[in-house]
Length: 341
Ligand SMILES: NC(=O)c1ccc[n+]([C@@H]2O[C@H](COP(=O)([O-])OP(=O)(O)OC[C@H]3O[C@@H](n4cnc5c(N)ncnc54)[C@H](O)[C@@H]3O)[C@@H](O)[C@H]2O)c1
Image (cartoon, rainbow, N blue to C red; front, side):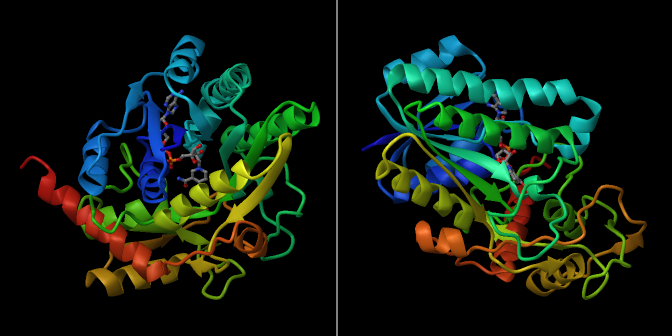
């Protein structure tokens, strides 16, 4: 089995991607420092796949550890998820974000070059588009100035990949620009594990539904959208996981140097109110929410043009908003069942 290193593989998207990699016949190898994940993720992975996934515990900024992993494993490629991702925190502690998110890519690229590993899939984000002037947003749309240090790290990392490829280095890279990942594995053995108060809408919704949070605040309902609330493109995490498998497989057929980038979304936008209504439908719960003021810096509406990834990587989202919210809700319920009373 060809080995694929997944940095940050114990995290939300990484762990689901490990499941998809197994299903496609790859052997995932994880490195994670568990700064934003828990060891029990590995148990969930074992329950779904029936396999013990090799996991190196440590920081992928550590060149010696990376050297050890690359020496011990003949890798076909790498998927680089490891990063800090809290937008709000990044405005308070920008250096923490620049240091981790950028340096980890530099260490990884140096180690890959040294070991002759060319194929890399990088986790980028639709945040690089800011508020696009036209929708749906295409990959050819110029990026805007980042709204946060976190967003800037994604832009800078994309630029590093582009420059490295321009230098004719033996690198074949794809940046996947994720829209809004939600949902969980249908088995409820894996899902999103936000530490503290969730910064994203769906974990906040499911925690409110479960009574962990008293109520949800909807930030603004007077925007220029169908019902006045913000619009996002919500993509099921297993669809997103599958896009990584398609990307890494595609890269194996390319000749280095190569760099390209793709939107990963459903191509549909949904408002916050639609998310709330769909959640109420799938959970049978009445969600407590209030309408609050607009939140500064929020993008009003964004959704993906997915034609490029559909055509070139032969990938299309399969799951609906309803599927994703049902899986998120079942995951939330499973956390309650498994938590110590
Ligand atoms: N979840 C989203 O909404 C979203 C959207 C766009 C892009 N992304 C990007 O996708 C990637 C994965 O996101 P996620 O939602 O799975 O986040 P996550 O926090 O659940 O997963 C990231 C994992 O990386 C680990 N990690 C962080 N720094 C590390 C380091 N230096 N060494 C080793 N491990 C480290 C964390 O412990 C965590 O397990 C990130 O790069 C994120 O910026 C996420």
